[in-house]
Amino acid sequence: MPRHRPCAGRRNWGNQSALFDTGVSPYRYAAVASNREESAVATMAWYRQHGEASENRIKELKIGFGMERMPCGQFAANAVFFRLGGLAYNLLKGFTQWTLNSTWHRHQIQTLRWRVCQTAGKVVRHAGQLCLKVNREAVALFNTIRHRCWKLAVRGAT
Image (cartoon, rainbow, N blue to C red; front, top):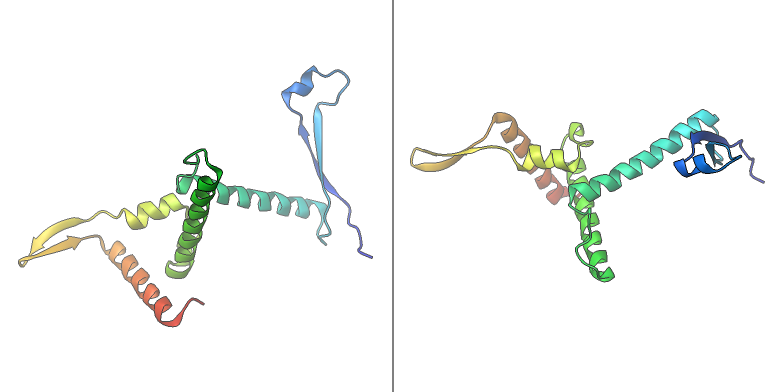
């Protein structure tokens, strides 16, 4: 028989409609039942972090890929649109994990787009050839990405 752990809970102020109810407490209570071996405070910290991480991923998916609104009123078309957005999100996260250093792993989509895809450069003619000039950090980053993509193609993802 599983051992039951005490519940952790919290108290919040209720919504404003409760202000007009007479004889009702102004607080709203919530409880979290868990079988974790940690203290109630640690369990609540884990619970809140878990929810915030999921909400941040959803927000990044919506804002980063322009999915705040569905494109039409047809359920099937909206489902395809959302699945394509989810696929693009997962591919970008995989690209970030496999080809960029760990300092890039926590960046949001907008930051990656700005710092990787929208790198400033200048097209110049040098010795009769057209050249693209970009700063050294960008060249090093692009070479690292190119080399890691090549390694993935040859060896496969680990």
